Amino acid sequence: QLQFVESGGGLVRPGGSLRLSCAASGFTLDAYAVGWFRQAPGKEREGVSCNSRGDEDIYYLKGIKGRFTISRDSDKDTVYLSMSNLNPEDSGVYYCAARTKFQRPVAYCSGNVDLDDYDYWGQGTQVTVSS
Image: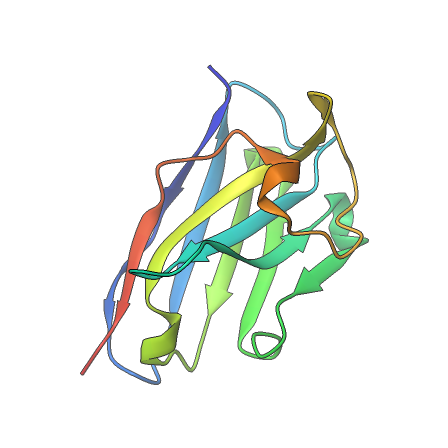
């Protein structure tokens, strides 16, 4: 089964940092743009960031850039989201997924973090920012 496995979440105080990992299971990442998404309680899931192979094409949600950094290790088929200066509004379950179209890989983000254009969702990892 093709999916991602997210990890690295936890409880952190405001102003703190976390690094989330997103490991591909059952496939390699090179052909895919990979997105990070989050869902806070009672809110819709939203796209946070996306990157393509070699970081050629990167997208960040407004207000995230400068605090979050997306990167990937192709040898490990893993995408990371390094988050700093966290605030309570960053709390939620963080997911990653691969961009696809007609079940085929899409290599670039092109500013697209529409949930319907992503597949192979993982189970998510909880991030809680609280004092």
